[in-house]
Length: 286
Ligand code: 9MG
Image 1 (cartoon, helix red, strand yellow):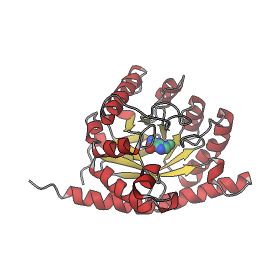
Image 2 (tube, protein in one colour; image 1 turned 180 degrees about the vertical axis):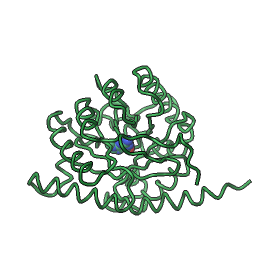
Image 3 (tube, helix red, strand yellow; image 1 turned 135 degrees about the vertical axis):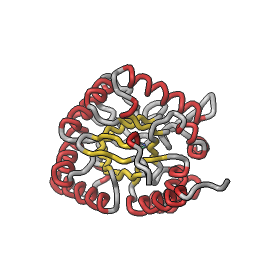
């Protein structure tokens, strides 16, 4: 397997090798992701879950304290800090994990990077006031995701005046330019088409099929489709029945160039990604 030096992302103290597909495990620390009360129990649960995902092969743990589901309400920044920062600290200190923080708030980015987070994942692509400057100053890699509008309104009637993959590529190109202008070098960026964010099922399917349009931007691609409604709508499956459909999407995303896969079900996704990658390494038909 080749390890070109430009396939490594320096994530704080960790180096993330993206010369082959890697898996990011999702760790939601929103109240609806925990079954019961006590703060201590919640933290311990989060830690145990992260430990399991690392043992199953997750390269990164993505910690989020604000739901980005369609219709989700905004969370005050103090609450987001209270939810996220203690988890980041313990993941870093006790598990030496490479932690990504799923946030759009500059305050959370700042605090998380000071406590040892290794990556920032922003579904708003650093468009909140101050986010660009804080992210640039953090020295961390950043995932820029495409989304039109805000989570509370985005699924009402998403419309694009051009093929969706071109609209997404154009948006991401513009955000990369904004990052570079703010001193955040492109070597620190990952790009994400934002499956399920202001997109119909048809948009999502087309975007995955045509993801090579984004590969042309020359930056590592991250995707998140795990358990999303696009699987439910195509297959008629409830959330807890979406793993087989999700694994098919992992495999296709790897084939279409994704190098970081954000998932709930880490073990099966690692296998799906590695199996697909093994096939791809043997070359294509002439
Ligand atoms: C936080 N979050 C939820 N879905 C996501 C996706 O598809 N990509 C990224 N980067 N983050 C996501």
